[in-house]
Length: 68
Length: 68
Image (cartoon, rainbow over all chains, first blue to last red; front, side, top):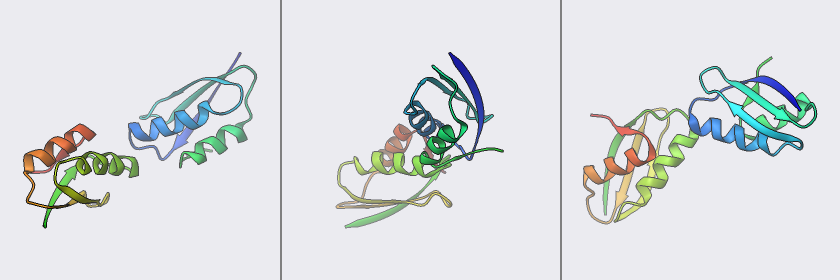
């Protein structure tokens, strides 16, 4: 079990949060995803450590981007 | 054929626009709906003039509200 946190830029509403959640939940090995709109905090729980690039791609598919 | 315009408060992204569009399109008699995110302008084309209250209800169902 592994937990990683990221910051997502550009989310403005609950729909944005849902889009990010849906895409990141589809990343292989991810078991749970939390997204906080106000802070942009994305918390990803997975079976094994996830690649930042996989999370980044998923966030971009939703139409947003990781900070940093 | 009748065209009416309203202003919607609270939309922040394209998902918000889609939600409003979907709900207003379901109002009886409505044939076409345009929503501009930047201005909040909602343009409703309908067979006969629509009641503001019907449009207001639809916008509220989407999670937003009419200005004024």
